[in-house]
Image (cartoon, rainbow, N blue to C red):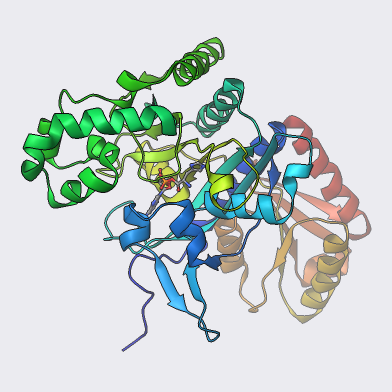
Length: 426
Ligand code: HAM
């Protein structure tokens, strides 16, 4: 039997990869415009990083990590997310010595051993950004604006931005007490996971998807009810800046996020039409994380969005990704002499930086034209025995549907001129 790819993984093959390239280009462009620099961290890290960073009480660390011992008996984990790694790299490379805040972004595969379903993979890809060293609510608003603007540029519609504040360690203790007090007589009615959360991390009960838990937590004290003055003021300022930059958002006091490092601002972007996995982006502030993993006390905030989920929403909303006309050229050479002459031209065109193809299979004109169509070629250069004897090349413009006979020694200039004019038109 043929070997198949592991469950929860995908091959991204030509036909689809173009969409990835489009998104990746948009990501690099917007990050550069907003002043973010790329960071690349290892795909695997010491397991302890995620245990300490993401948190022992989270599903990610408890159930979903790809953890193994390497040959040196070190416990290694394939990264389930990017934030902990970026914070480790910030400390290890002493980026706290640079002017703050340090604005970083990343793009790459993450690994979680999840039950696979639509929009939920075991190897998936995130575009994420982290801002380290900035506590001001302006930073929160700028991060959310980047997400908002990115989705606007790629044309996603009907998105909802949910925001919340989960408070700081001081007001969280107060929330924990109030919540446990409220739920103590109903504890056994909670789902099994929430009964564990009740002791270890009661706040997480708020966003449990179990119907019974949701009913029981209908009127529970939320973190917003228990914010200390500083956290309250911070959250109000974040909202003020979101409003001035025109971002529409909804306060969702039950959205507390599934990773332990969050403090204060938390947010998610929800999209319709991709089933239960409706969060396409999530993030928040994590002011204690850098210190937790051994660095100097440093505030931080960031987000990550799932590329597979964005592509699913784009498909669902029937959004065609950018179709900028391509200026590709194809040499359709017929016969041995023409093929050799064509190959010479191929090299000259490539040296001039033109994107050009040639049939390498000795096919007839009809199938070469089909090849040109399939590849989205704009100009086909037809070269057969007759053209060789007349020292010309026939240039067919596939977009306009016309053709012209061009002297062979001016063909490169002719195509270059045409390409430059069509670039100006775009
Ligand atoms: P997260 O909410 O776990 O946050 O993941 C962020 C996004 O990654 C989700 O909204 C979703 O689009 C995508 N995602 C997560 N799991 C899967 C999966 N199994 N299959 C497909 N897509 C998935 C984080 O990872 C945090 N590190 C975000 C962050 C950055 N917070 C602060 N900075």
